[in-house]
Structure formats: C-alpha cells, structure tokens
Amino acid sequence: MPRYEYRCRSCGDTFELSRPMAESSAPATCPSGHDDTVKLLSTVAVGGSASAPAPAPRAGGGCCGGGGCCG
Ligand SMILES: [Zn+2]
Image (tube, rainbow, N blue to C red; front, side, top):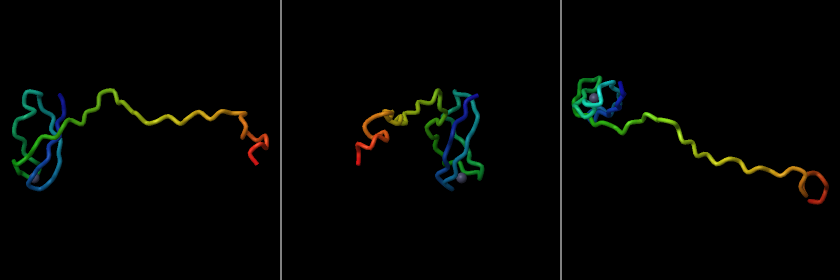
C-alpha cells in the first residue's frame, strides 16, 4: 500500500499515511486532530537518479607527475 505524506496547516506537522491510491486525495487528519491538511508530493523514489558529477580522471605520469617540470 503506498504511503502518502501530508502536512497540517493548523500545526505545521507532517505525517505519513498508508492508504489505497483511490483514497490518496481523501481528507486526512493530522495526529493532533486537525483536519486542515494538504497532501504533499510523493517522496517515494523509484530507482534513484543520482546525478553527482564524477571526479575528473587525473592523468597519471603527466608533466606534473613528479618529474620536476612544474617548478
Ligand atoms: Zn495539526
């Protein structure tokens, strides 16, 4: 059962509910009893797409590889 995240506009709390997809937009009540809540975008990540830049490969044995050519 998918989990949905909601945010209470009364107390600012965020909470998760597991409910059928058909009820994803149904009113949710926050743990403190408020019913003025909004559904947040799903944070469920399917197959993460990390786009961290890979470090550039450093050429070994180049000019500055310890040959003394760089001063
Ligand atoms: Zn609340």
